Length: 425
Length: 115
Image (tube, rainbow over all chains, first blue to last red):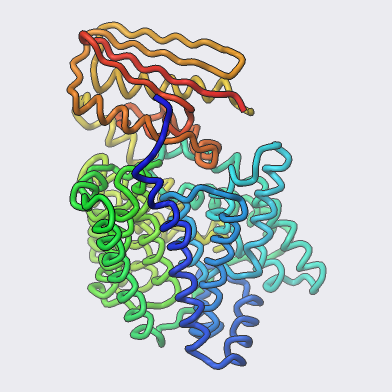
């Protein structure tokens, strides 16, 4: 049988243009939320911040500049994918939303480029099309703070710092593609943020190297809760819009959204679970909106505030709702993190615990494959691990939960596999 | 293309893992042929009970188009997990697929063109 995809083909254009909706919305809202001078000053502050975890851009640059930065970062990704003629699917939607989410606290229109260049250079050296590593390039911006930390947060002087930062960023981008592919075997695809794990390894390596030259690279915590209500309303409206858009798209097409959602919910979420293939585009868009509401509800229920990192966590869940996450495999992880926060030393409503829950859904495939109890255990373990691994890379790896998730998955999955009864299905 | 033979072996590993765990055949055959255009892979699982619905799902999973953008990143995952039930990765790594089921024999033919 020659492969063809008649049903999916109809949604190509929808996805091709639809992916611009959210970054353009953020850009427009950002431009109208503050004066041009405030936005320009805010952008300058964002670009010149070290950007390591947790630098909330809402605190550093204000809401207007942060939304403009997030919108522009998203548009840059979409344009790059279009220029490289990448066929959009669940993984790329997840990547674009992840970049937008982290553009609230770590990625900006300055520090992502060296990573892109490094990945493109690797493709050039390997003599393969750059688009083959486009996914790694987008997710690889997890190490973007490495560029900012050296350029704007080190003891080096202006020009030397900029060149060193850029070169380190290019180096990080260059080594990511082979490492990212190899690291998949460490956790067998049970940690969805695989590049978070890879970035953690690369970041730890480079940070240790930098520290031996007397560079100070350490996590910090700058958070801003002032825009909680405004951002809460903006996001909740957008998530409802996504659900409505998914429903309307379905009504225009196959009218099988319930059936497609059943297929999505039956998936474990283990890499690689492209819900735009397992289900279809409308059901994936619906799932994205729904998961956005679930993630927002989790934050509100725990008494959390919508600041940069929390919004990043919510948007990452939304993006990965096209690539592995659904209500059945995420809720057990959220429950596990919540239970852990009740029994352990951390405040359940604090930003670190809330983002541990949101990003902890990187372990959703464990719940999807092995059941609710395994998912709760994974979430319970995840909170302790994620609170302890950040120091290794000094906060230059933004996907710290992906780093921690790799350890949790590789620790738990072999144990669960050895304990479960023989199962041939 | 780099790792070409290893990728072919990974495809074989994934198909064998999925089908042997799921259908429990009493005999399994795998042949591969290297030709000018690439590799042909033929799998044959004997004495298996596969429903029409399962055949439809198998064909559907294997019908996804080859996708180098995902293949170059994810190929190392293939064949790694004993309880995998996804053949999507195999589909992303092959250009043509054919699934036949007749008299309790399941045959899968995959073709992978060299770049």
